[in-house]
Length: 427
Image 1 (cartoon, rainbow, N blue to C red):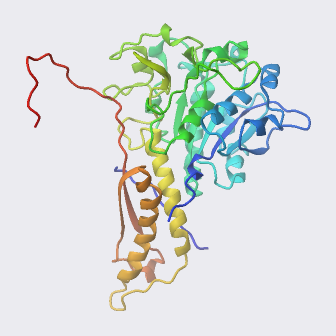
Image 2 (cartoon, one colour; image 1 turned 45 degrees about the vertical axis):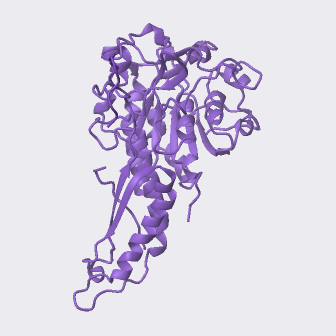
Image 3 (cartoon, helix red, strand yellow; image 1 turned 90 degrees about the vertical axis):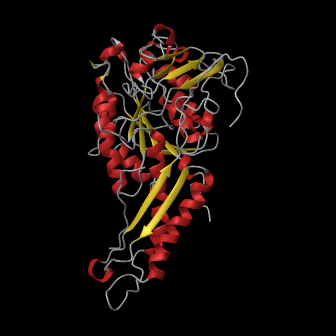
């Protein structure tokens, strides 16, 4: 069978320009007669589509489960963008959902036909029944390697994704929280942000994390954009939702962590405080959690960064780099698929590829990257090379190398303020 595929290398005419916004949510949910069912894929375009399935504010409260909430948070940032939903019964763990051996997230992604670019995984359970390990509900830590294995599988299926896990039930001393940076899972991020006013609606919401909000913010911006960009990604809305019901309250006016404690509970020293330990800075890697922050003199609430569960020295230490690679892969795959099983003229003397054929393999991918990423400001540069010294008659393969320069992020904005008698002359 004709094949096409690519590997991830280390070292740093438009297609559907909204395709990369399509996202998914999977988690525990309730069943409603003639409405939403478990083990079923739903494609939603707005919150009203969910409500038509009887996923409502009232049913969230009645069933002690946050389902409508995560969906509505996604659509708060992405009106009209497609969101795929898959619900599992109560008691199914996030670890079980992510495990490639189970027909859950694996089946969801397959049934969506590769349309999903990122997925948020959430859990509805009684916090009193959680087993705690290294600062989390242990299900969070157990789910990370399963989620990474799922991500790796999706790459082999030519539909790479990024997985955002709900970092439930942060607990214990900050210094005892697991270092997610040491888990070698660059395709996975963990969110520990919590809207305390939502948590106050039901005791069983007290350990939740706002993963629907995180996925919503990520989907709303180009793939290269950090979810913590202050100018663009304020997650607070002091006016609340334009709807009636239990959740019609100001949004993230009382930000906290999934410990059910407000940000003010923690040491906010920017050098060695709790948020540095839990998240990290340029100088201090930290634990790699994604959490909410406020900035002195600036209104709003913002995610701290877009950490992934891998070393800070990994090329894919941030979700922006991972999602950039994912989009580049998909674009190249689509662009070069028509070349599968195509004839390749070779030099009759040494068997090498004809220059014109090599140039064709290069140009289709290069043009696609230029039009769909570089011109959109999602990458800084690119280089596509098809080595002409290949013997296609012997291997039946044409190998092309792709180099992509990602867009950087101003994680720190610093300088020196000096009082002087007169200003220096401009250079």
